[in-house]
Length: 128
Length: 131
Image 1 (cartoon, each protein chain N blue to C red):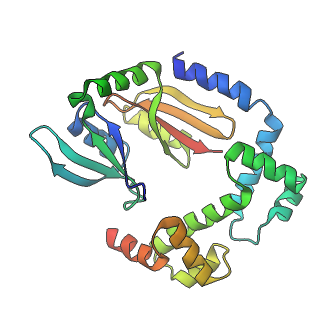
Image 2: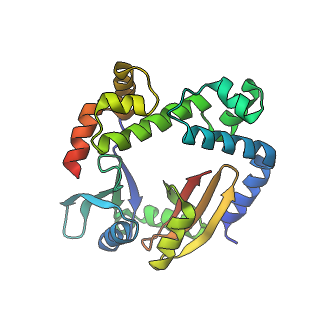
Image 3: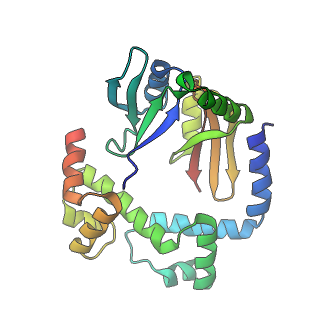
């Protein structure tokens, strides 16, 4: 066993010893991934996991480093890139990934990706 | 300020280009000759061709400390960097079938699953799947 593997084992024992917590956050992440286009919020997620919402928020942030809502937004942006690459119009993409306002979606997309959805789509189609 | 290029030190740029494109599936982006033996050589993810570029830099051949550092990381099994995959088991099997050598088979570590392979250019590279 090399040094890196020893370190992985050592850190796993320290950081990942609570299997129940890990199962909870993994289930939550997968739920978000499979339902990103739905109207999701902390209340919905905590109801599904039978956990208090603040406990769930703390756990998710502890293991993934971001909040469930930040993860949801990242997922929606990632999925929107797929739709845009496939030629779906921007407004349709916005609603397909669960956002409610095309203008807010375009602003958010530009903040996250660096270019507007229309520009992203042009470049993606050009690159094919 | 944007992250446009990150570097990976490689001992042979041509072998690195072949490995990173033919085995890993990246796409060549920029290839600019700098001297008889060095190129500004970058690859990108096939799915994100205007995403961050990886510079396959020949630093171990030109700067002794870079070589020393690379060797030390390699010997310790420490990955130089990591790439994300959707399904680690699938990617692991695909790469093993292509002859890629792994020092760590797919291993669960809390909320992620990781594996480490030899990029044949002096580096360990980690693959990671978020669970």
